[in-house]
Amino acid sequence: MTPVSPTVLRCAGRTVARYTTRPELAADHAPRPYLHPVTTLAGLPVTETLPEDHPHHLGAGVAVPDVAGHNFWGGRTFVRGRGSVELDNHGVQRHENFKLCDPDGFVEELSWTAGGERLFREHRTVAATALTDSAWALDLTFSLANVSGRELSIGSPATNGRPGAAYGGFFWRAPKEATAPVVFGAEADGEAAVHGVAADWVALAGPDWTLVFAGATARTRRDPWFVRAAEYPGVGSSLAYDARLPVAAGETFVRRVVTVVADGRLDRAGAAALVRKAVAS
Image (cartoon, rainbow, N blue to C red; front, side):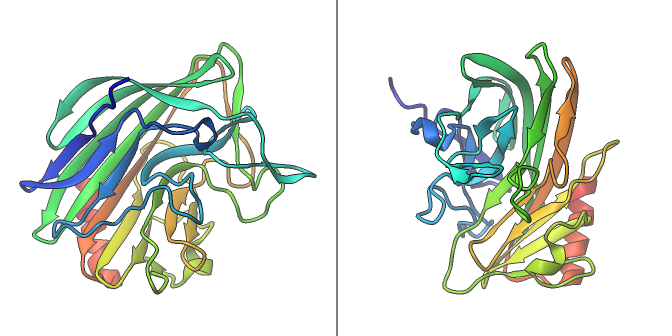
C-alpha cells in the first residue's frame, strides 16, 4: 500500500502543521490520525511523536484509553485490581474522507472501530487562525456519535482505579527538553495547581515557545485538564475524570479545544489576551 502524504496546514502564508490521516503503526499504538509536527510561526516544533518515554503519544489529536473496554490510546490498559497490563484490545480511528480540505483547515469524517465493531462515527474540524505576527491558534472540534446500537461508556485509568490519571479526549504531546516547561493558568501556577481543574485555560511554556489550551465547548460541561510537565510535557482534556461518561445509543457529544501556539514565553496577561482572541475568532 502506498503511504498517504500528510495534509499540510498553513497559517499566515507559512506551514504550521502536518496531519497524518493513515499512519503505519502497530495495533498496540491504537492507530489514529494526528498532527505532527506542529510549529510556531517561526518554525519551532511544539509537538512530539513516538517518544521513548511514551511511544504511543502521537503529536496532537484525540485519544481515549477506554471505550467500553477498548483502548483507543495505545500501550497498556489499566485494569482495576491488576494495574497496567498488556491486552489485545486496541481500537483504530480510521480516516474515511475529507468533507472539506483547505490550506487553513479541514473537515474530516472518521470511524472508531474495535473487535470488528464500529463504535463511534466522528466528525472532526481543524482550523488554523493567525492571531499576531508571533502567534496563531489551532481550533479542533470533535463530535462523536454512538453508532454501535447499544449504550457505550468512556473511562480512564482514574475511573478504573489509578488516581490522577484521568487522561482521555483531546491530547497534545509537547517536546521534551532539558528542563521541564513552566505551567500556569488564569489564577494558578505549577503542574499540581492546574492538573484536574476545570479552568478556562492552562498554559505550557518552554524556553522559546508557549502553548495555551482553552476549553471552548458550547452548551456542555467543561472538562478538567490533564497536565504533565515534570515527567513529560503534555496537556489534554479529561472526558472521564471521576466517573465514566455514558453515551447512549444514537447519542452524540461534542468537545472543542482551541490552542494558542506562540513564539517566546508568554506571561499570564499575554496568554489570557490571546486566548480571548482565539476563542472569539
